[in-house]
Length: 178
Image (cartoon, rainbow, N blue to C red; front, side, top):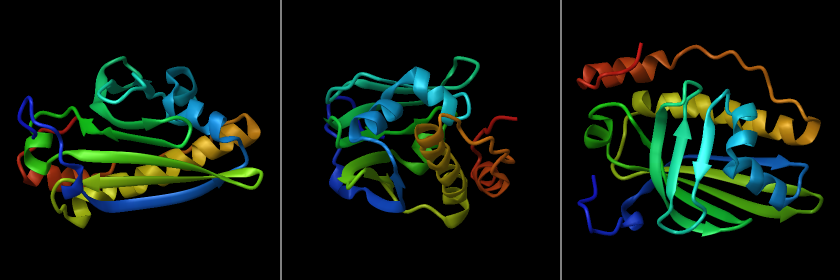
């Protein structure tokens, strides 16, 4: 974890997961969807994004029960084209064991659509078992976002807990929910 008072050196982070999706919406609508608590609850399966949209601002993802599931800081904020945030899951010992995570959303106009690229980068190399949770979750989240923006209805995706990731974390001594 970064020591207090020291800047985060994002050049050390390496992309592990990159997804690109095309959405029939304006860049402004996609930006609003990614940064609005009320909108995100619909496509993010009850989770609400709360962001202070300025460099250094707080970034929180609240679970449906209101608890802080993800906490972080805004690293870059260029509405409606770019948002980079630290994305730290609030499970005891997780960040210390795995390092920090950065999530970047790049929004580019593509004709009458938007090209949305989500990149998840990590401070240190992680195993495929650890990465398997996000690699299963991000496609469902982004597909639900696309569906909501294009049709007005999010996807009703039923997903099992990421067993492979949770087993790997438990083997490392990380306390996981459930």
